[in-house]
Length: 319
Image (tube, rainbow, N blue to C red; front, side, top):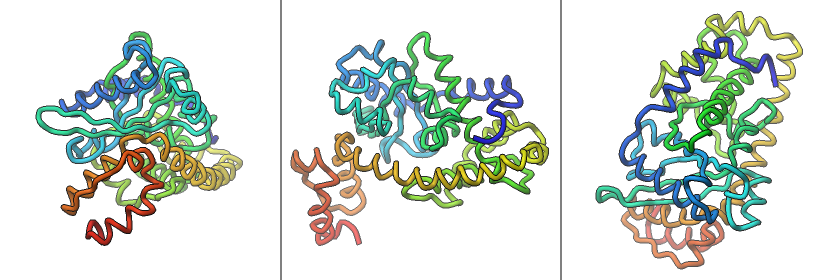
């Protein structure tokens, strides 16, 4: 990992993160977050007030998409590894290729709200957002604005610290790719584009620009807090070996990231329970074609897609 792994202005970064995590969310997001917390604890066979350390919301549900129209995204951080699941295989899966991802929905004010939520221990989350973790899967997500929707007493400082670490890791890792840049938002754009390249489905630069347009002050101020007000000076301070190592690291991230994406996709076929119902709802909503699923198809949506996709195509569900 390149450069110094700290913020030039840690007090400013802390203030920004504290303010962002405390921002109010919609009643819809709060409602489905409560369901998610309860379901995660139930899966582990525990008390939500003890098993769950914190619930973080992130992504489009905080920007411009209602849980009634799409999927709200949450991370459920657990007080220990035993809380991942009462199933030993699920716990093993979370250790090998975190996180475990599940589907949840609830009815709120007459609307069905839908979400997917990731589950992993807080200690594991802290490791995966740190500079010691080459793959950006975690630190890229939580370097962007998130919301602390629930936290158990005694865990708030650790969660906030992990989010700060994610931002520092994201921006510091992008410096070796930012040669010649002078604007702080350009550094963010470079960082987002680079992390997209490590995913199985790479997003466009337009996607990165749209995300940044929803909170331009956040992206500018966090970059200034991490690298300082003078971006060219921060870039000039990198030693030659840091530039070279940074380029090599990003090649490794792209290679390993795509492999990890495949592993997580395969694992999701066994853990993303309920996701098939969401997809069926989505298809019917957009095409008018009703999708009736068997219990087997609900449990194994990826396997079932082998025969479901041709059948739905013939019915006109998609072109």
